Every structure is written in C-alpha cells, then in structure tokens.
Image (cartoon, one colour):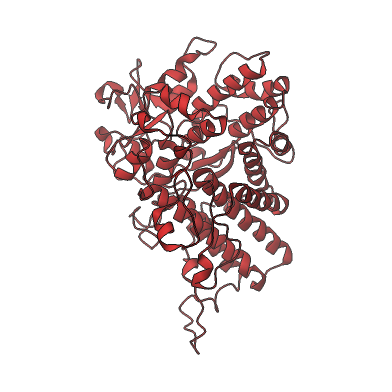
Length: 504
C-alpha cells in the first residue's frame, strides 16, 4: 500500500456523464474512457483508501484523530481551533466544523467504493479478481459506515451511485439498519478478501482485517456470541494467532508507534502515511497534497516547533500508575505513551526539564510523536496510524467471553496483554472484576488511538468517568445528547429528507 496509495489520486467523484458530447477528449478522464483496465480500478481504490487520511475529512487524518480522541476523559484539546475545543469541551453544535468534515469524508469514501462496485463488471479482468475487488470495496464501504454509526447514530444508507440530484436526498436509516449494512458488507469482505498480498500491496484490506472489524461491529452491538465467533477465527483463547493468520503482539509495545515498524505482525489494518507527494498537507486533493500527516506537529510542544494542541489529562497519567511491573517500575506502556519529569527523561533529544508543562497537566504525549528526532519542524509525519491492532482483538475477545460468563476462558487473553507490560499474571477473577480489569487495560493500552470515548459509551460509563476526571468542559456534558454528534447543519439545510438526531 505504501506504493499503491501514492498512485496519482484520481478524483473519481468528479467523473460524470457526457451524453451531450459527440466527441471525447482522450486526455480527459471521463466515464467513457475510464473503468477499462486493472490500473483504473487500482487508481479508484487509491482514491478511496486515501480518504481515511485526508487532512480535514479523513477519519485518521489530523482532524479525525482529534475528533475521535477529543471527547475522552483522558484527552484535552486547547482552544486554538474553535471546532476542536468545542467538541473536546462538549460545547459543539450542529454547525461545528470538524464533525461535519468527518461526515463528508465518510460519505466520500462510500461514494468511491460504490463507484467501484457499480463499474467493476465493465473492467477487462478475470472473474476471480473482480470478486476480490468487490470484497475490498465492500470492506471500505462497511468501515466508513461503522465510523458513521458510532459517531452520528442514524444516517442515510447509499449502496448505489446517485444518478440524479434527487438521488442524493435520502432519509436517515435507523441505527439498527446501518449496523445490518455494516454486517453484510464486512461478511462479504471476509468471504472474498485474501489473507495476505504481495509486498508491494501491503496496507490493503485483508481477510483478517475484515474478520476483526466484523467482530468489533458485533461487540459494539453487544452481540457477544457472534463477536466471540469472529475473534476465535483470529486467535485461540491462549492468545496465539490462529492459522492461516500469523498475528502476534510485538515484544516491545512502543515499537508499534515508530515509522520503521509500520505494517508489523501486530497490525491487522493501518493507514499508510509517507512524507512523499506534495509539500502542502492542507492543500486538499491535488498535486500539492502530501501523503503524510501533520498530527505529530499538532501535538508537539512549542519548544520543538509544535503547535501544542492536545494533552493527556492527569487522569490518564494517574491511571498508568495504578499498578507497577513485577520489577517495581512504571508500566512500559507509560514510557511509550507519555513523557513526564522522571529521572533521565528525554523528549526530542532534550532533557524533559527544558519543557514547560501546560494547563496544569503533568505529562505530554509521546505516542505517535517523532520524539527521537530534534523537533517536528514543518515535518509531515510518516508514522502509520494503527487502525486495528492484535492487542485490540485480544481484549475484545476477552470482553466477549467475559460478558457470557466465561471469565476463565478470557483470562489467558487478558494475561497476554499484561505479560507484555511486565505485569503479574492473574489467575482468577469474577465477571465484574474481570470487566474492571479489561476496562483498565483498554484505557492504558489504547490512549491516543481513538477508542476511549466509544468504549465508555458502549459500557454506559461516559458520565461517571468524565465526572471523575480533570477534563476541562466536563460540566457541559449532557447525556444522551453527547453520546453522538448531531447531523451536520449543512446536511440538514441541503437534504430535505434527512432529520436531525432527536437529542439535538
């Protein structure tokens, strides 16, 4: 994918019909001269994958990372960018820009996946390749709908390409209907995707990624038995990867967040970033756009040319210290995730004492930062975003088992996570204690990975955990209103069929 995704991005959504023209310019991409070759399909996929990291609208672009993390009790975004501060402090409205951008980005990805599905039969390739491409497009469509349903709840469903202006005006489907669409797309993807690709295509969706996300979709709906079935295809209850897959935990947790270890054995799906292409990360979809992201510079402190936008709350700082390792040290995930004033602490090759802590917080973000370099400068970070890690599979599998009263079966899965962190293995816990431990492990394992708020929501624990934090803006949290974002006002204004979420 590092190679694949940098194929010149084709703006598939701009291809239109040219019935009025009697002649077609061979130098211009149109519906008539596209969708002929395998290269055309790969270009279409490149444009579809690429939406995941688009700077304003991509779910793993800088604004998407800020959106998915910003509402957590472990994360704070300062008031430099109004829309980010609003969502972080629960003062957002239907006109707040960042959720609107993510809504647009998801539907752009869905449109591009639907265009592949609509035109694949016209392409001169083998039937087996067509079936694999159909599965891949459905994975991408299903993943975008997953992001929509967990953020906006009831949204319109498109499974075909709109042909007229009126076709774009679609009413909300129920949350249940959106989940059914996700399950269908991911199930088809499981059946049609390969286990692996040749090395030049690394990063494309695989069977393991589809199984993992299908299991996650079931887990988010509390379909514990169905989730167990999917996760059991990826791992045994001892935590080992199950044939034909070879997933495993990296020995060193922190190696997951270094560019040199991208696409490693722990990764089921990740977003491919590289400092290539244009030099303007905010350029939009044109030749000036970089294929990396600015997230690391956004989160870096001012002393190293960062924009110091985001901070770990003191709640997460203290959560990491709830348990020491078997040698009496801090959890190694704490060293990989945060930096604070401990003996010998360095950050961007400077003693940590040279940095000024902000807003009363005791630490700064180290995870996903290029902190081994001298500064972030105007860097375009090329550390891949790990969208789905094997550690997540193990803990979700443990949760699905525990919620069915199978805590003893879940224990080996949980202990795999604990053992890598050099924590003492556990022997036996009640269901309630097991879930408490899983919740703790998820909080410290996945800080900055965009999972915390969504975990709290499905556990029904947003209010109590935000109230118990030092998060600024917690007094503005109103439930169930803030469980989801509102449908963006721009959509309400232009689509007469869509309705606002009732709590907004």
